[in-house]
Amino acid sequence: MTNIWSARQFADGEVEEQEYYLNSLNELDQLAYLSDWSRWAREEQIAPDGKWATWLIMAGRGFGKTRAGAEWVRSIAECDGTARFALIGASFAETRAVMIEGESGLLSIAPSRDIPVWEPSLKRLRWNNGAEARLFSAADPEGLRGPSHSHAWCDEIAKWLNNNGQARATWDNLKMGMRLGERPQIVATTTPRPVPLVRALVREASVSVTRGRTLDNVLNLPEAFLTAMLSDYGGTRLGRQELDGELIEELEGALWTREMIESCRSVNPGVPVRVVIGVDPPASATGDA
Image 1: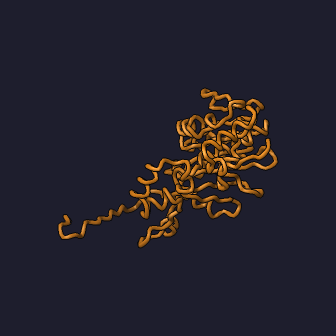
Image 2: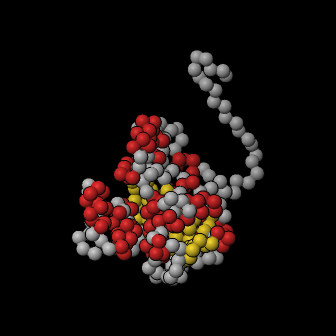
Image 3: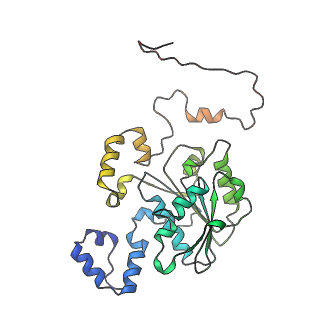
């Protein structure tokens, strides 16, 4: 293939130029061009260089996190028949609906020449060359105790259930099973929330972090959606988190910081000897004490 356009060149070209370019390619080259993610992706959607063990994509909604994660899996699965993936979502239903069958899921992005076989009853995806991906739920950490993997994609880790430490247990069991291949790797995609797992990963030196905003993907999002989001949430704390991809660890003006709360946690609190109830009645002129 000669005179290969980048995605930006293609997007900036006039319709006539786009048609002329595609028509200048033979059928196989057309299919290869349209399915080659490296030509269409933004730089921040491509895996970073270096010998990283974990790549954390922490960005606003609509950034293209799911597509980036799915394309990373696809790029490895199509080239390495020995690859064994763990696909982990907040629940089995979400793993299937988003990571497998969603519009940016693995079945949707697969080129027609190499669509993997989806076996729902086995919670397994198989490529023609032998690569496999199995589905897991972050609500069931014990499901990851035992299986071995070479790669893993974890989606929306900030919403993994953690009322009894499931999120951390899921992550720990996953890492202990990353023992196949020469360089096991994990990709985690999430909208930022200051939950313990996300805060821990951001601080780890071995984790490569990619941050991004909703507006980074402006070419692929409806104008009406962007207008509504900026109008309703622009400049707000929720907007900073959900649109700008900012990890807000402390609320401005908070009397008790997160560090203070975490330092008082106990794994085995035992039997309480006294119960204290705090009451905070409204102090306005019409407040009802």
